Image (cartoon, rainbow, N blue to C red; front, side, top):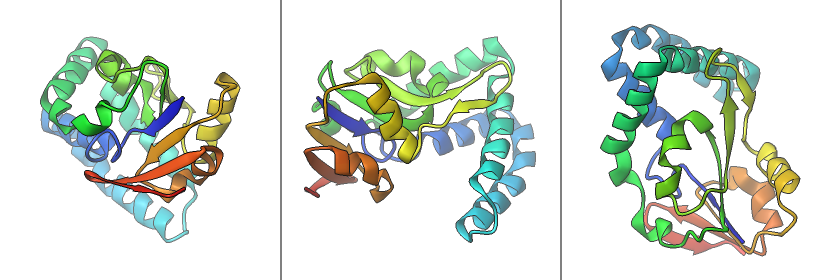
Length: 187
């Protein structure tokens, strides 16, 4: 079994950021939250704010995006129709049906797009679309924890764009760093 990170590995870029920008173009009221998001990210990067504050503000954005179910579903379809070109064909070609994609992106983003990814095995963040609350953040050490809860097999090859996935890199027999279209073996 192989495992793949999603953002900047299979998808060229940060899908959540692209979705935020896409939604911002459709609903300009989201712009009111930009200063808060930028301030939180700067404070977090400087070590002056905890990740919990970033999560809470992320939940506010998730709630805005998922608030109207009819518009939300249509927005997700439109987003993937306009961003499908950002999926890297050379990475998609590597994915087999028994492989796993592990991502911090929320499940509501990927649900309608799973059939195009080559596997149904997607581990992602869970967001309650009624409240916008993040119920499980599939990020850093939570990725390996969730993987081990669901799968007893090890990981033969793991593909990621970030050393932040250190726990999965260490767990896999072979690990690869993906930067744009270049793949470098780490181990």
